[in-house]
Length: 318
Image 1 (cartoon, helix red, strand yellow):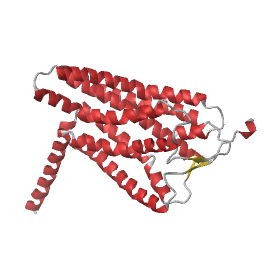
Image 2 (spheres, rainbow, N blue to C red; image 1 turned 60 degrees about the horizontal axis):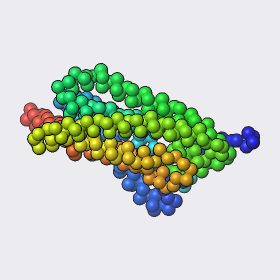
Image 3 (cartoon, helix red, strand yellow; image 1 turned 180 degrees about the horizontal axis):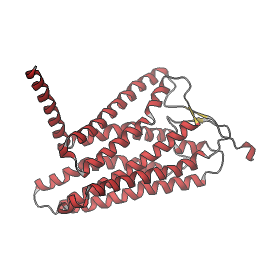
């Protein structure tokens, strides 16, 4: 039996469609989304870096989230765009392993960062007098570092367990990228250990952070309800609205998908979920935080006015 346990040197990805016109349309759609994602998240990093008024804990975590989104979408979308132009969509074993590791590490880090941001909002709303002392730069750096380290460590374990699976010569993945559940389905050995690891990983980077976020917002809602004025309630809720929107969007679909890693799950469902996190979430996050955040819009206005003023001054001097 061991003689038949073989590993392949490359995988073939079926992608979303084999129709050339459809692939051309998808290339334009995903290419545009990718450019907008880089632009939106890059703009957040630029605004926070240039405007001293945004040098606050909330925006420190938002910058980390933007870095994660840029890296996450960049580890899969460029390859998808290339594959839309190719007849045979292949990816080497090494690149496949790198893609699995990157997506797991960055995805886990994002969920943990959202939990850290929920704690930040809890301190801002429920204990505003101690907020700046509790969320000092050292605390923020430690929280962010823990998110990155736990996400990376979790990815190392899950990637090692997944990529060791033999496929007995099978190398066609019904997916748009190398992804854990698709690789597990391709294995020709017992995958009980992998299913246990996937569930344990989901508990660590999904369920626990989700519970912490829920607990934080339970306290936040209680604090908001105790505010007597309507204006005060709106202001307090406004500081959490963007984060709550992103949390609801991110945790919901992930919990449904990864807490039930059975082999009977729909391959198309997996593709939709992966595309949602690879393309839509990194695109929507900066839009949600910028459009619903007065500080971000004010910072953009100040920078544009400063730039316009500098140009006018330059023209006058000339």
